[in-house]
Image (cartoon, rainbow, N blue to C red; front, side):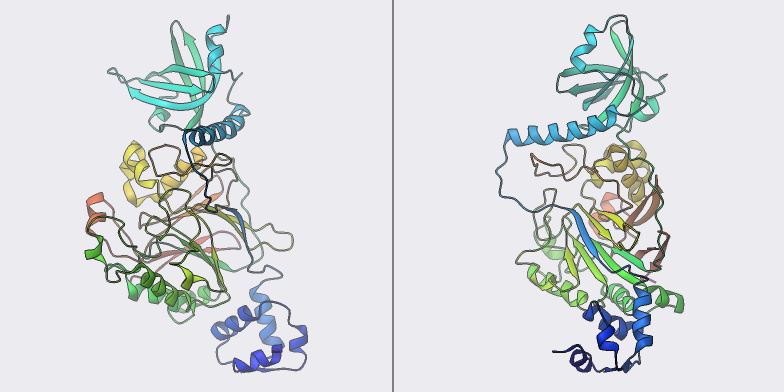
Length: 475
């Protein structure tokens, strides 16, 4: 079929010379015309220029998956766990040892041999943390050479950070030896460096959603259909419709469906009790998304794949209906590069559902005080650790000897998550932090957890300057 025939099949006439000058994604172009050039019957130079303007000087809607976990069939035993933690330790300790704040890093087994030297630095894994009766803290720190007991006194400059420590994370410490005690003066987290605030000439946008929980009796179909209608330029104010016309990317950070057998008694909470039919319902919505919008799908703990992190992409017998031309499946977590173009490297987006969030909300006092209403604080916390689930008991993990997919090795431009059903936005050292709200009404289980869901509050990020606008599809 020729290009002209294809346009004719879609109901468009083609001006002379246009077919020969058009190079690009035909489906995306037709989708653009349908949704952003309504009433057009003839494909002429003006329409083509409008499409090229949408792509802004070469910024194509490309999606490059930079970090993606693929399911393996490797059997796991104790040696796998040892290799997993050793790999994590090696990477983080190498980074920490180069930090200027740490002075003369030594291995733990050399501490007792230090002569005439009362100050030194260590890098190790937190194996235990406990508070004494007098209100001081004791840290058990270990590295491959041994274990050491450290004291953080109430008068120490490090005391303000000691409650931020969690089991199994890798940290650096500056230590002062006084008699038989090793006092911690400074605690240093792996941290992310300050990154450049990227910008480009493309005035397009990316949209971030999660936690639709389709199949649940508490799924909000009217609100979600408003969102779909908005993407098609059929809902919202004039300004909101104008914003919709700029959307190039739609990220989905997990929990597309409510699943089946996720928790006891869930069947009573479902209106679609077959997981295959739940994904068919998801596909029904995704088919309404304009074809020029690239959709990136990542799983969550309610989706039809294993619970252990990292979760592989949603590409199995349950999710075949989602295999659409504009859909890219990625793992949880994953790193995706979008919108690269001439002279611009694009934006690296870290996608993580947030499976470990509950643990840190329960175990870190500062986060517990803020609760589920400030998800951006949890995201900042994990960036400082350079790991999405540093504590062994924070989430189920399937370890890999060769890599730790939960390690934040490459610093992203944008970090998105979901899970807590509450929108959140922040910026930490140049990294944009976005939590994606939900399309599910508050459940009894959420209320018992102390969650205060805010459905339908969807962040839309400008690809020109990373500024974020929240659109409310609930009201």
